[in-house]
Structure formats: C-alpha cells, structure tokens
Image (cartoon, rainbow, N blue to C red; front, side):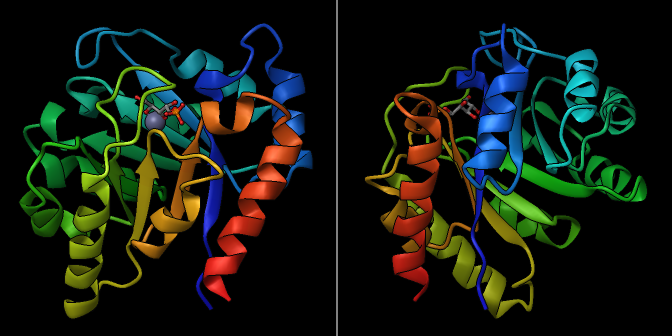
Length: 223
Ligand code: DX5
Ligand code: ZN
C-alpha cells in the first residue's frame, strides 16, 4: 500500500522554542522533520548547520531529513551524518559530481536524495535516479518559506513518476517542497508526491490541527 510521509519544515518553526514545536510535530503525527540548510551562496538566505542538527537529534526520534541548499555539498556530508541526519538531499545545481556524492551518502548508510529547482531539466533526475532513495522536486525557488506553489510541479512529478515506474525504480520516492498546504496537498499527492514538505502551511495557525487536517486530505487520495 502506498504511504505518504508528512514532513514539517522547521524553517517556519520558532527557533527560540524548537523543542516545543518539535514536540507539537510529534503530537500531530508528523512522519519526519525537514531541516533546511542554507549557506547564503547557493541561496540568498543563511539558516542552520550541523551543530543545530545535532541538538535536534537529541530531542526527537523522528527521522531527520536534511535539505542541503549549499554549494559543494560533498564537503559536508560527513558532518551532517555525524550530526544525526537520516535522509540527505543535495541540489544538482550546486554539485559537479552528482552521483559520486549521492553514493557517498548511501555509503554512510543514509538515504540519498537529489533536489531539482523548478527550472532545472528533469534529465538530471533521470540520469541519477538509480543512485537516489528520493528525488526532491522543488515547487518554489529555494531560499525562503512562505512562497507560492509553482504549478509546473504537477507535470514534472507525473513525468518523473512515469519514468520511475517504466524503469523499475518505483522504490525511489518523490518529495515536494514549497507552498504545499492543506488545500493543495490532495493534488500534489495525486501527481505522485510521496514525501510532502510543508512549512508555513502547517506552522501558520494551529500546528497539530493542520497536521491532522493534512493527513485527512492525503488519506482521501490514498483510499
Ligand atoms: C524553501 C525550503 C522549504 C521551505 C518550505 O527553500 O526548502 O523547505 O521551508 O516552506 P513553505 O512550505 O512555507 O513554502
Ligand atoms: Zn526544504
């Protein structure tokens, strides 16, 4: 049976009270936590690094998904693994030796992901899918929370799903990130998303309630 994972993005959490917000994520039934790592070069924003990931690792057993929006991510894979990341995605636009880095992530026994910006050709995903446990199709240009969903995601996700099925790679999960909320999650899941990231869509308002509403919407599609 198909399972869809809900991943709150802590970028929209209260960084002065992460422990409380993470515990609310757990109570609301989040499947994993999405951590946005930004370096001020690959994207204009700067967020957190391995030190914060390590602190988060100590207060939750939820799988930690580190989305590396950094140039030359190969330099930091080991740091994020040691900090406690379970899933690590790298952007193909910030990486020259894509499959080498994906294999390095797997070499540490972690789930490897390749992330594509909305304007990046899907060929990057096709060429590297065999080295991936998940492929992240961005539905906003990365850098900030609270941006509007870019609808080209739908056809991109459908094409990628078809490719994966045709090539015996159904086990590779599709992750969506950016502008996903309770009111568009059904369409997103119908288009093939298996890992749903949501920041402002969950944290604006009542987090637990939003998580439960999102789960209900997803279940309607899976029925
Ligand atoms: C954007 C980040 C996202 C962001 C999503 O660059 O990768 O994870 O937190 O936030 P929302 O869901 O508010 O678009
Ligand atoms: Zn992200």
